[in-house]
Amino acid sequence: MNSPTIIAFLGFIAWALFLLVLMESIRSKMVITKEVAPNGFNPENSNLSSFMQRLARAHANCIEGLPIFGGLMIAALVTSNAAITDPLAYIFLGARIVQSLIHLASLSPTAVTIRFSAFAVQMIIGVYWCYKLLEALL
Image (cartoon, rainbow, N blue to C red; front, top):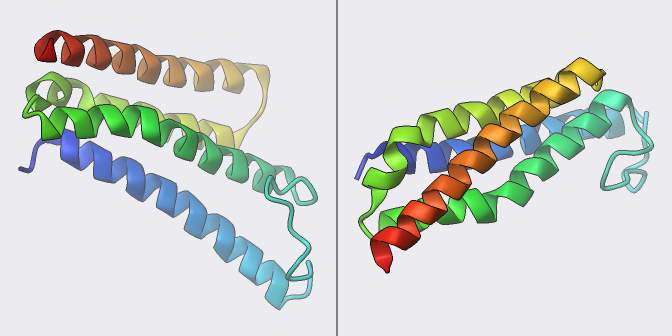
């Protein structure tokens, strides 16, 4: 079952995990160098650099989207309807990664517009997948 859907689903999880490991590696370095006390972190990194705040938000965006978009991919797989999600699975994953990378890079108005465009691609794909899956199952 090596469909683009399962690969994109695992890619989505791997990307969220990468962002988490990156954030916790930087936090660990900050603790080891005594830059921040072990209990000195806010969940949203609001007491840290703007990059760390953007990293926390980019990771949270992935976690927030996983039940919706990941759920659609899993629904397609368990109902043998991956043919619905396969054609756009890599585009979805690419848009997710682009959204996160832009989030990490900048909060400029242009960057925010491009970041939202990448998210809009994901939303459009998600709505399409949901509609087609419901259509196939009803």
